[in-house]
Image (tube, rainbow, N blue to C red; front, side, top):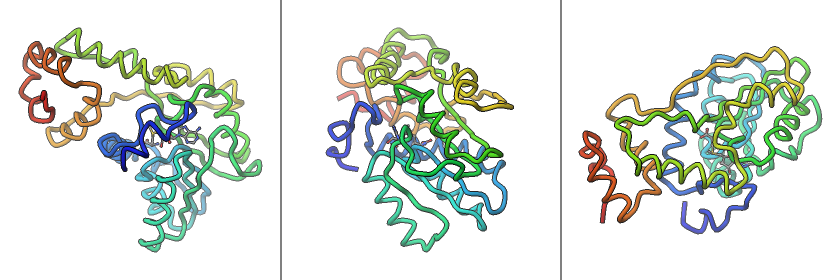
Length: 252
Ligand SMILES: C[S@@+](CC[C@H](N)C(=O)[O-])C[C@H]1O[C@@H](n2cnc3c(N)ncnc32)[C@H](O)[C@@H]1O
């Protein structure tokens, strides 16, 4: 994605981190890691809606698993929608469609889908309650919603470092400045209840690189606010993290 597709083209309703390659790579990596959660709920002939499908990695995997069902991925970012539709066409995948749409005003009639999935989307939306109500409207009465959202104010850093904390705070402030809630995950149960969902089940997991192979992608996305003096000062105090960081960051 070019710079033009990044923040400049984004709206306050949009996505605060923008659409640069490092960020999309990270999201794709995370989507693959968390995919088991979604795939385990798929059943033959299901109609599935993924909201905020972004890079489309999860949507394509859902389509693959759902050989006798269909999946629609919606996103407000037209370039991603177009790129995903092109990829689907080139790969002759017929049970998948991507549409440019706003989660707050879904262009579907009531009772359209068996399953709605979203990950890391409500965090960027000012009124998650309305988004969940809208998801409930398009779900069939027997339908299922799967939602995965962050609780950033419970992040753990070790070794503790004020500069690292500051860069993380910056990420949280960016989300807030776009009207989002970086810790919307802790409110999910209440939000889902208010949106009319019943029989809710909650679980939690950590987002972290689990193997050395996963570090480059994680760092390219996570280190975006770290530039120039901040990065140099951080490296001076990073302790055992310094070597691993130097592999992926350019202090300049
Ligand atoms: C952090 S990305 C998550 C992408 C993907 N779900 C994942 O798990 O990696 C958030 C996505 O939600 C989209 N988005 C933000 N606000 C939206 C809205 N109101 N309606 C539809 N999509 C939205 C953004 O364009 C972006 O692609």
